Length: 137
Image 1 (cartoon, rainbow, N blue to C red):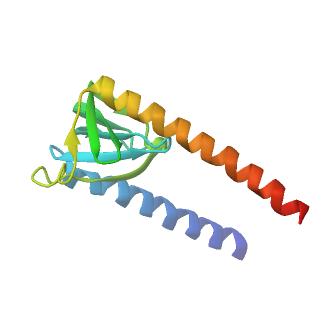
Image 2 (image 1 turned 30 degrees about the horizontal axis):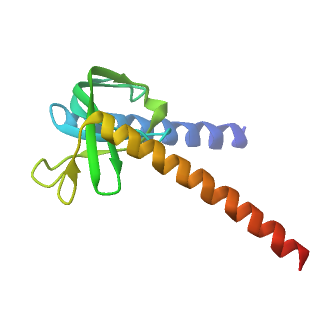
């Protein structure tokens, strides 16, 4: 009985924390937010709605792709994000959001992203070969 009480109290505390965390989204309504997703995507848009699971609706959403000091925004429109995919979310200061970055067109940023991925893959392959050489010593 004592164990059940502790478990119930722990569940209630966790549920109330979740409820207060989701309720804090009320303060972010109608503000421009940056949302980082589990897959690494960065979505910017105006928060229009949310639910108890932290699923959110962003208006005029764009996916911001940044490679080096270049960036591009790919229009998404009205965008729904499942709460479980959100890693980080915060208000964007429009005056400084692109400071130090140069805007390029979508095709150019996609080519740059592919080149960056290819370079990372090559780097990984080279490091794995170096590990093999170290194992011979």
